[in-house]
Amino acid sequence: MKRILQIGMTSNYGGIESFIMNVYRNIDRKKFQFDFINMETGDKPIAYSDEIKSLGGKIYKIPGRRENIKENRNQLKKIIRENNYDFVHNNVLTWSYSDGITLPLKYSSSQVIVHSHNSYMNPGMYTRRILNFVNRRLNRKDSIIRLACSVGASKWLFRNRPSTIIPNGINTLDYAFNSKIRAEYRKEFNVKNKNVFLHVGRLSHQKNHDYLFKWFKEILKLDSNSILFLVGDGELKEELRRQVKNMGLSSQIKFLGIRNDVKNLMFMSDTFLFPSYYEGLGIVLIEAQATGLQCIASDRIEPEAQITNQIRTIDINKRPADYARLALESIKKSRNADRKESYLKVKNAGYDISNTVEMLEEIYSK
Image (cartoon, rainbow, N blue to C red; front, side):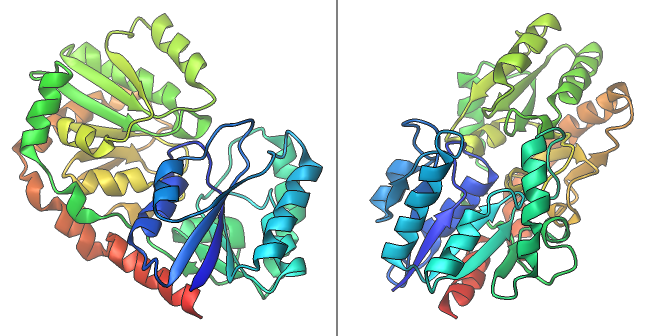
């Protein structure tokens, strides 16, 4: 059995976490076993902790870097030296955290994977930017295996070094549109006759909520019978709640927090709004398309995410008011479309989890 140590899981139920768990649920666990590092602050568990344990994975809790950087390094080194994994799989956004790369190269015979999941980094974050710049020298090491979720994510992290693009696959059949669930959820959320907009993403700068809120306010000017649901958590949660309150939109914009029924919320909704500043790929866009949901996204998303004709892109440098009517027109398209076959388009585009797992199993087998 090949043993793989996964680094990069956090307490956030985000894109990286969803990707790793989609793989873990579907990989042949008689041949490949995942263990995980938890370096969250305090006693906070990583996402999907209970499920990881039920699937046979170990979770090693070590201090976060901000808590104790020396102990963070020492304990990670101990885990790597004692277990001698076949692979140490680093799921990263930048080069800022290097110990998951340098320690196994120095203290074990493990193969090291660096997997890029984003195409930019938030402004500010000066310490992380400095570390990213300093540690970029690791890109010169020929011994590391380079993976990326998109061409843009590869160029961002690896520059001109070659990498393998691994599609962020989902279990496409699970996302086949279900009209019964749609009706049940619209009744439960009391939105049976409303225009339902949905946004799924971390409450952070990257997702551009300021534009989203202003955009939705313009939508309400054209049709007040509209509501926006936000799924996710993050460092800007309280600030964004205050912003919504100050805009007088608390009854029209609802914060749902972290959910494990995002698929059903997509069935319930009419249009998915996604004005991000940047994305490595945007796995929620893949999921939304599989449910047949109409999507309006920033033109800064990676081209690989535009699988179907359900996506329209917008220029977020333009006024939100310019796209209010487009959003309402998409509602009509969603309701008039046959959403049942959309998951097949996503599957045929190579984004089914079976394809992703097959590619990773081949890499892990070498």
